Length: 289
Image 1 (tube, helix red, strand yellow):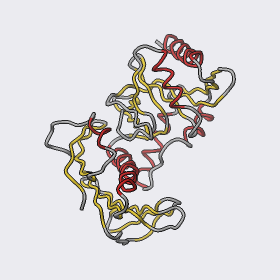
Image 2 (cartoon, helix red, strand yellow):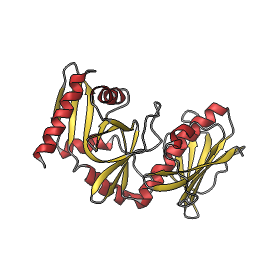
Image 3 (tube, one colour):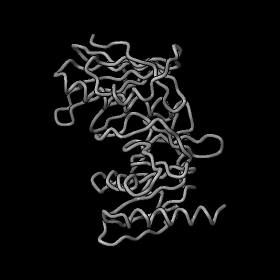
């Protein structure tokens, strides 16, 4: 019920068939990834349902969802974190993943759809590629990606907006969830339509040149941090797989991510904060040519 054949999109080089709810809020973000192809290698289907059927064996329990195993399939039951009542299910499959959402208020369902599809694509892309997902706001500058990361509310989006304001040629890649794929012996950051409350993203890719962790500070200062420091900061911002099969690949990707130059930036809201990072990264690139 309630789902329509919407479009085929190319995201991180994968052709995906989307069937979403009529009142989807994902539509505008998906349009920039739409292609005319009639072939695809993965379907993401969303249905309105009257009941959530529960079956399988519980393998993992979290605050927001439970994972079940049934006939070699992984099923995720999304739940109200206060009542524990299931309101949606995701039946994962590498050809056709189905999301069932309990029929509710139109706006509520649209938000749930956006949230639940955010679970599906990381699962799929990490199955298909050497890939990892990291929370942050990313930009492309001089054909290289810079990923700014921090806890929510620190000012990642504010900082990348300053880059757009003060540095010519800067493009947004993604303002929330970043796909990083190891390909051609380098880490490549891809744009994708799951880009947070501001829905800022572009259908571009660039090699990841640096990761910058932010904290608020009266004065602007930046320092390169060790791999040990970077590991603990990265661990808080990456999406971990919930199946054992992907764990080894995820660990390998974390190792590759630790090879990327990583910095700690204390900053205020100013052009000086932007220029400080810009100059440091340009100096680093010049030294390593």
